[in-house]
Image (cartoon, rainbow, N blue to C red; front, side):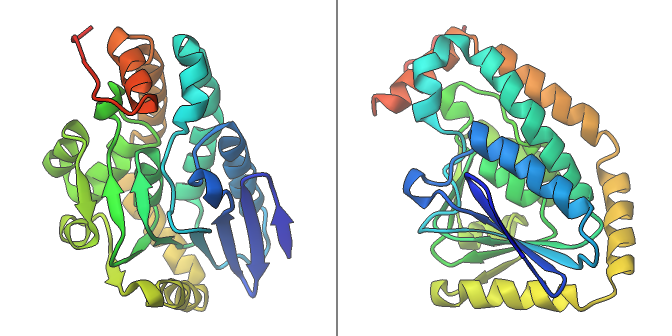
Length: 264
């Protein structure tokens, strides 16, 4: 079964659902289409009979550049309302994805930036190509973090390392991401697709009910405040996006120059 949406494709075969980001020419951005599609796909997967595992992947040379600055720039003076609308869909989708009672494997190539890193960090197994780069761009824009990053990065990297990653706007190589716990396996670029699918298929033929309970227990132990944290992230980002620094950050990135932040 195949379902095509504007930014995603869902393929289901033998209990394995493959969710593919399908806007490679735009860097597979997190925008209004994506947030709606992501929510719809994972709501559908909750009602999919016989689902055993999910593979999350992207077409093109990059996994995702995160938020689409070309969308942000023209409306940068009205970003709070836009942020609230986008996150209302995205956070429903993220919550449903992370609580889905089957394993989710992320296949990551090229660049994974900003909110895309928070998204993939919530997956159960992250397989990265050797050339992959993981970046946190929020602070470079004068933004606070979103896409569940404060939860998923802390869970994977530990609070101190995750905080430094976001504060400093770091870019990690695949080897550095592996050492930090952000990636679970790094493979040669040419082997990425086969390696990620092999893991997803193996999980899809495993003890699904046990996997679901394992996920639930770890989610309960580590993310007891998940829903509240997602909402706090959304409202904080909406508030921060109205500041002078955030407006400057978006303009500077769009104009390809160094931002001049004033702390207000």
